[in-house]
Image (tube, rainbow, N blue to C red; front, side, top):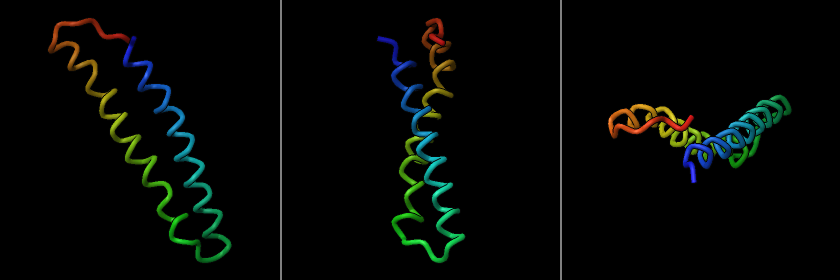
Length: 72
């Protein structure tokens, strides 16, 4: 199984979740002081995006280092 596909698809969905949580934050701030859980809700998708993005960024370099063709 190609790991690139297993990482890219969740990365795309996480970006949508992150965008929705940020928009919800701005909408809640326009109405007043939002609850703490809403303020911190973008952090989990953000950290998951960070790790999956770093993996996808390093993948071509690692493939060169291992002498394998990139799968992408």
